Length: 461
Image 1 (cartoon, one colour):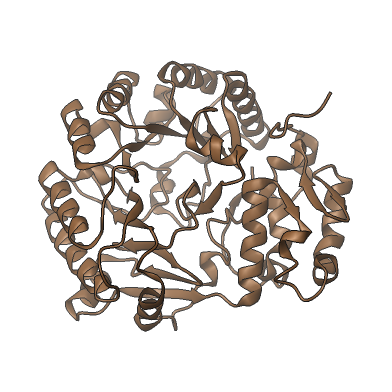
Image 2: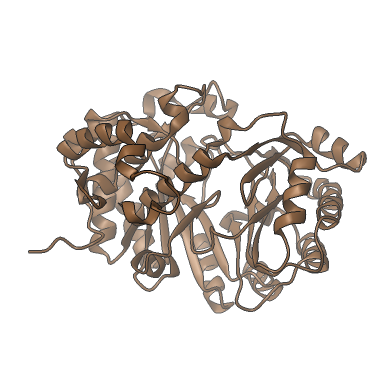
C-alpha cells in the first residue's frame, strides 16, 4: 500500500536519539545572527527598492496584557490601564509615517497581522485609530488575509463583531489547556464557555479561519487531562490547531519562576501527551501541516501544502510568506527582500528613536548569496518535505551534491535512521522525518555547523 503523501509516524526511540534543541526557522539566518551595525539606512534602502507594486504583509505588535501568563516568553507589558496604549498608538502613527516616506503610493496588503502581547487589550476606539492610520498608508482589500490574536477572557460578542467590521477575517485564540488545575498553575484561568462564545461570535461575524493554540508540557498536565482538552477542542471545530512545546527557561523569562518546576511532566510523559495529541488530531480529520501545526483539509494552509504553495515567515506557516513584510511596533521583526530588521525591544528606546524622527531599528541582517541559497533550501524542506536538486541548477555553478558534500554526508546518516530518502535527483522526507523536520533542516544551517551562536533554542519536539 502506498504511504499517504503527508502521513506522519511517531518513532519514540528515534526522537529520543536526536538533538532535542534547534531553531524554528521562521527565518534563516535566525534572529540570533542579527547585528547592531545594521540600521535605519539599510532598511530605508530596501524599502525604496522593493516596496511598490507588489502586495505586501504588515505586522503590528501590541505589547500590552492585562494579566500575566506564567509560561509566556513574549515581549509584553502587564498593565490594567488601557490608557497606556494611547501613547503607544501615537508612536505607531509616527513609525508608519516615517516608513511611508520610503515608497510611492499605498501598497496593497495581502496580509495583516496584529500580534502581541494581547491585541484585544485595545478598546474599539484605539483599534479604529490604528486601522485609520493603516488605511492612510496602505490599501486594504476584500481578498486580504487580516488576522488578530485574541484572548477570550477580555473579548465580548460585540467586540468580535466590531473586529469583523474593521476588516479582520482570521482569528488566533490562545487556549493552552482547559484543565482547571493546569490553568491555575500558569495563571490563565479561561472557561470553555467564554472560549466557545468568542469562536461562535467570530463565525457569525464572517471570520474565514479560526486557529487555536495549545501547549504541552505545562505543570500538572497528564495524558488524561490533555485528552479532555482535545475533546473540548474537537467540539469547537477550529480550522487550525497549533500544539507548542512549553520551554521552561526561568533564567530568561522571570514570570516562569512562579511555575512549580516539580509539577512539570517529565520527558516521557510529554512525549506521551504529544503522541496522543497527534493521533487524536489525525483521527479527527486534521492534516499535519508541519512541525506543530494542523489544519482542516479545506483550510487554506492544507490546500497550500497539497499544491506546494506553503511557505513560512515570522508568524509561522503561511500562504503569503513570499511577500515582503513590514513590521511596526516595539520588538517587531520584518523582512524586505534580502534584509531582516528588528525594532527596539523596550518602550523607552522605541519612543526615543521616534521622538528623534528616526526609525527605531535595534538590529538587522543583510543576507549574502549563501544565506539566500540556504534560506530557500530550508524553506523547501520545512514546507514541502522534499528537495529537488534540479530546482537549484540555475543558482549553483556545480551540482547540488558537489556543493553540499558535507551536508549530504550528514543527511545520509539521517537517511539510515529512516528520516528521509536520498537518490541522485533529490531527497524526500519520510513519515518518520516529518515530525523531525527541524533536525533535517539544521543540517543546512551554516551558523549551527560553525557553532556561531549563543542562542537558546526550543525543543524540536
